[in-house]
Image (cartoon, rainbow over all chains, first blue to last red; front, side, top):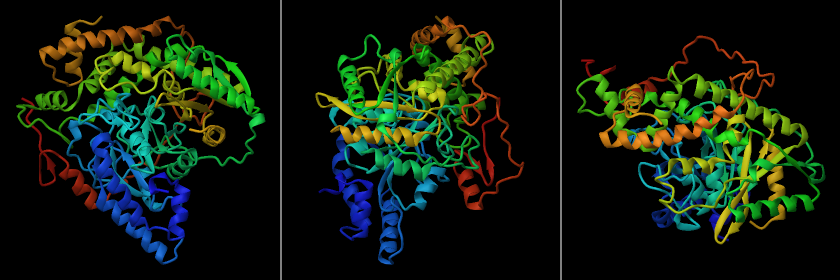
Length: 474
Length: 101
């Protein structure tokens, strides 16, 4: 078996049995990145010195018979909006093209303690805004299943790297579907934790009330291992929450699965619908109780999201002003021009679009009719889920309305790109945990299934996902 | 539909410079997007509280007060140096900026 096919546990066992060393694993991945990433372009920056020095430490520990963690020596890719100290962090933008991170994100600190090996920083839509990675200021990342198609976004680089075997696991971030949708497009597992489960310190902020960091992996167990390593309360992130320990017995015959009727919409890809309905059948045949539920405000989730998110973006991106870090337009004559020209040139189209929408909906004349209203509708959406979860344990939906589309297909139609998020945004608005895992293929193209859970019940959705993994062949 | 003047005004507020062509392009795109999100006008929101906090700890919907001691979390001088070095223009420990006029 090739190293790229091994799971975290298999690699860990192999290291303990001395079938191979951490250095050999690392070199194998770096070699294949050199060869294969020219076509896929999942990485923006490689960190081979860091990776090899981390691998060396692991090998030292093994030779000294010291105990090593499950993640020790495991090659990891990190989305380029998560700070890794002393490495470049671009957020996929020209405005941070040469920015060097002065500190580690909390999740990176935690992963460094497990001795995971950081291979490099992966490509993303600029400032995590997008659903295809085409908004990266540098280049799009291609789908390993079809190089003419997108890898999804905004964590497209991370999803593609895992799918192509260029990393064992990866970190992504999810504000409206940015872990789950690329996971669906690339045939991998992607988990968005409950809001507050994972610290956002060191994540370049997009929409602070929605952002979460989460893992992408080839299988559910590997995603769980990474999630458990990164979760936890962090004094540097006051929205982070200490996890409650949950011990329970998962029994498929006791599982109540909700299927929202509003999610099977007209205009949905018929083959995606078929795959999801087949998945629901599989759960039913295995003994799960399937219940049709209603999320009455489902059709308002995307417009609600595209008012709140740009509003928060306009505040969070105000810091990129050419003064403290990043690109600065030196030719500007006065302070105002520094701001105007640095941001006008340093930010791409989608970023500028969203900052402007945000500025508009927060402006005095429009605050009540747009932003304030959206915040109230957000409460209604959250209540829809609270009501649904009184009757069911988990909610099953498609992850995305289509499989991966062709590069350039939606580039000129921002609204069409926003509609890619139709099934994913609600979980962010309501702060709920959600996972996407492979459920089938259309031709060669992967299609993902989404499982949404109650707050802090990641373990239940992970177990449900693992169950589905065990009864399907994807 | 938003006007070119409104686009111009918003861009200025957001401190983003736009060329004439970009102003036209963004006018069309922003109009489309704002029309779409205007769909929210259909929803009845009387008596609904705005969503204050994402943190799911408190299911009663009451905003939680999360405070810490007003103490500086001292960073190493190495980190402080790096932060100053990140600035596009600096002299010793000062960040240099262009004049206002």
